[in-house]
Image 1 (cartoon, one colour):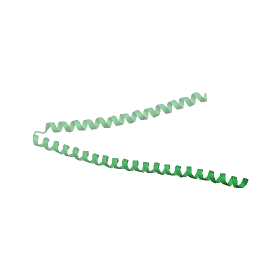
Image 2 (cartoon, rainbow, N blue to C red; image 1 turned 120 degrees about the vertical axis):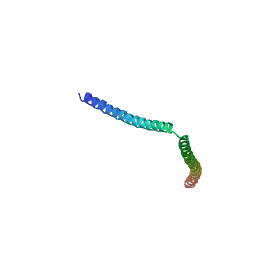
Image 3 (cartoon, rainbow, N blue to C red; image 1 turned 180 degrees about the horizontal axis):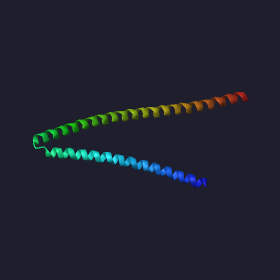
Image 4 (cartoon, one colour; image 1 turned 180 degrees about the vertical axis):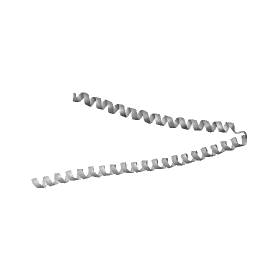
Length: 125
């Protein structure tokens, strides 16, 4: 009976999570539909403009905004590439340091085993 109750609770919980996810998807789709509706209205308004000069000015503004956004994204991309190169350099430095430490450890282990052998021979003599 307890197992049945727990399984029903789990199903209810899963259903609630799924409902929440679907609700979030519906909300996102609603926002997207609203955005598309506004864009359509803006495009209709541009098409209804009687003076071609206004349409041209609007198109030029849109183009200039797009160019500015493109330049900003390119600058961000360049910064990210610089960050990647810096991180790669740091990673290579860390790998080199680890290699050096491993070599030092190996040399120390070899030297200490040699000292132990000498000490053992001295003790036995």
